[in-house]
Length: 361
Image 1 (cartoon, rainbow, N blue to C red):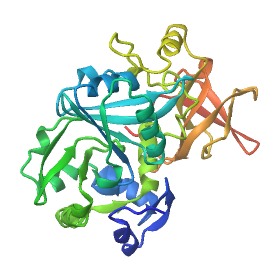
Image 2 (tube, rainbow, N blue to C red; image 1 turned 180 degrees about the vertical axis):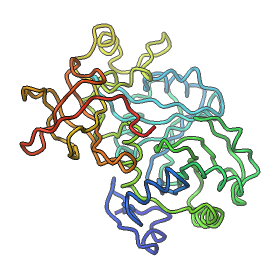
Image 3 (tube, one colour; image 1 turned 90 degrees about the vertical axis):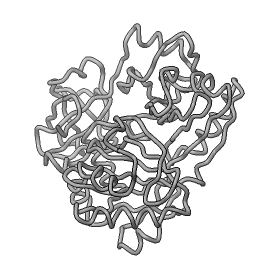
């Protein structure tokens, strides 16, 4: 298995380790619920160094991004971040990602760890514009410092006024005595906070500085288990569960990042444009359990008569709500909030209700 610059830290702290996307990653430390609530109420730190980073540079950088992603990158100005996806030729999604605009001819793409190789091959093979591409995934480390106390912790370590960085914006500055750290007001938890990018050789110094600065705020390390429950409470998609090569961005509720502007000619654009005009046969919805039960990936969803109408893509017991919550695809007729649906839990028919995420208010 691959390691991150923090792997020995995780092991020394007693984390439960497991393979994820080819990396030896911490799943939990003090427990998923404890870490989840710590992030919601204070501050937690996630090692996300397994994520992938690609640089896109040169005079054709923007055109490349317009040709390969669904969102309109032409609206980006230096310091802005955009959520988008790579549509494939058959109506599905290669991956979802973030685009960082450094300069008019310099961008960074942040992709999912499990898809680094696939995404890199996709970018290289679809580089019609002739942009300069660089896979920097092994030369960058990343920490996500998340929660309502994150800003107070991080501000102790930088001269950059973090309160002046709006959501989905970033800047590059000093941090814990390290120059050129990317300070990004983004995250996958819905609890607020920042994501920091830096060179691997500075990783341990930055980790130690953050935990020293956060001691008074009850800072804790958090693993991938809490990262998953936090994102699910917000209704954020997870690639491989809620979206994949077979799911359309319009089916997944990602029409808001699928822009059919004149300057874009991404794969399968015509079919997706037709899908937008005619509607989709199924939709990704949020639902919460009325009966006691925990939805799990792959469980069937049914109507009141027992007819199968879809399936669960993600599910858990909500640490903050103490009820079962989930995401799943259902026939469009059953997608309206308030609709009663049923979870087939190993033959048991359990009542649920379609709701509009987030589950955590």
